[in-house]
Amino acid sequence: MKKHPHQNQPIKKFTHASSAKMHRKVYSSADRVMDSVPYPPAHLLTIKDIFGTSDKPNLSLLLRHLEAEGRLELDAALTIMIRGRELTAREPNLIEIGTPVTIVGDIHGQFFDMLKMFEKGGDVASNRYLFLGDYVDRGQFSVEVVLYLWAIKISYPDTFFLLRGNHECRNLTVYFTFKDECLLKLGAIFYEECMKSFDCLPIAALVQGQLFCIHGCISPEIRYIREIADINRTIEPPTKGPLCDILWADPVDGYDNEKLEQRSEMYTHNGPRGCSYNVSYKAMCKFLDDNDLLCVIRAHQVQSAGCKMYKKHEKTLFPTLVTIFSAPNYCEVYKNRGAILRYDGSVMHVFQYKWVKHPYVLPNFLDAFRWSIPFVLEKVTEMLLVILKYCSDENDIRLSRRTQIIEKIVHYYASLSDEAEQSLLLGNVLPPTATHINQTHIANKDQIDFQTAQRMDYPNEHLPYNQYRRK
Image (tube, rainbow, N blue to C red):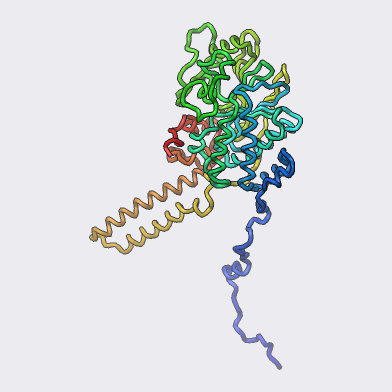
C-alpha cells in the first residue's frame, strides 16, 4: 500500500498572526490609498487656455479647473489680476449702482462656499452683484477666490462690482494666511500684484441713491457722502482717518437699545478693533438724514444667521443699518449661516445658505511631513529620556543634568504636538502668528458653538502690529 506523498509530514499550524499577514493588503508607494479621490489637474492653465483670442476669460473653463484644485501659470494669473485692476482703478471711490442688485458680505477665502452663494444669487451673466470686501485670509482658498472674482469683473465690468475690505491690505495678509497661500501656489510676484489690485478697489457704493454700502461703517470725518471722493484710496490703509473708519468701524454693542433722546457720545473708541470707532444709533440717524439715505449696508462682522438688521429709523421705519456676512461656518468652527441680500428698489430679500464640503487642507498649508515633525520629535526624545534614566547612576551629576535637559525638551515637543492637534480642531480661527492657542483646550469641534468661537477668535479682531513694515 502506497503512502500519500504528504503523509507523515509535519502539519503546519496557522496562527492568527500568520493568517492576518497572509490577508494583509500591500500598498505600492506609487499608488493612491484613496483612489476614489481624483488627482488635481496636472496641466497649468495658460493665458491662451483662459482667454484664447478673446478679451474675456472663459469663466466656465476657469471655474472647472479651480474647483478641481487646478493651478494657473503665473503669467495667466497675473493677466487676470492686472486686467481686473485696470477696470477697478478707473472706477471712482464711490460707485453708483442701480437695482436689482445682490449684495455680498465677507468671503474670506471660502471658495467652495462662494460657489454655493452664486447658486443662491443667480448667474453673473444676468444678475448685478456688489461685494463688500474681505475676499482673502482665514480660509484656505483665497487665491481661487480672487482669481475667479477678478475674472468675472473682466467679463462683466458694468454689472459686477468689488469694494475693498480691511483684509485687502499688506498688514493683515502677512499676519493671517493670504501671503503664505500666494507664495505656495503662485509666488511672491503674484502676491505683490494682488496688493496693487487691492489698493485700486473702490471703497463705497450708493445703490439707487438709497443704500450706502461699505465694508466697515461710517466715519465722524465724513458728514456728506460726496466727501468720499476726496479720500486717497490707493494706499496701504492707515490706522486712523476716514479710510480706516470705512474699513474698520462697527456699530456700538447697545445700538438697538439706544434712544435718540438720551445723552450719549455718537462715536466712541473701538477697543476690540484697536482702531477706528463704534458708531451709535444717533450718529447713524444723523448721517442718514444729512444725506437723504434709507439705510447703510455693511459687512465686517460675523453673524450667526448670516445677516442682522438693526434698529429702525423713527421716520422711515426702515432698518438704519444692516450687516451681511457671506462666509458660512466661518473659520470652520463658527457654525454660522452665510447670507446675501437682494434689493429690488423697494424690498430687501435675504437668502441664507449653509456651508459645503471642500478639499481638506492642513492648517497653515503644511504638508503631512512638516506637520508630523513635532509628534516624531516628541517620541524620539521620550525614548532618549527612558534610555538615559535606565543607564544613569543616581550619583552621576552629569547624567542627572542631561536627563533634566531632555525632560525640558520632551515637554517642549509635547506642547508643539498639542498645538498641532488643536490646530486641526480649530480650523483657521488662529493665524500662524497667534500665541494664545495654549489657553484653549477643546476635545472636539462639536464642543464649539458660535459664542465659543467668537470668544476664541476675539484677539484676532484687533488690528495687528504692522507685520508688513516690520518685515
